[in-house]
Length: 148
Image (tube, rainbow, N blue to C red; front, side, top):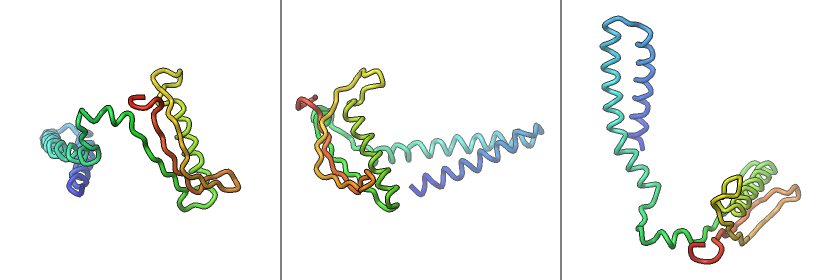
């Protein structure tokens, strides 16, 4: 990650320098622009394997045979208000409402195409006097069992 950050910082610096050299049209500036573009190309080549490595570390590699199980599995969602008092609790309540709406729509678009609704089961829910949520735990599962 440090290497990617360093490469990104160098890229930003080179892009700024490239912008500065574009304002002049003398031979020296043209030569400098070519050097900068070459360095940017090299940085892009260095970033490619790093971004692939980061992606693979964030996204699990799935066996194609497991995809059916993945689409029918349940998800447990925990929402906690954290610091911020009543405002944090109200925000947590809004997040819960978004999850509920998404589960109801099941991934469908605004016209209702493309989704099946999911079941929500609350494991725990702690509300505040103002209608906020201190914490909520819920299970989202597909309807109708496997592939549902």
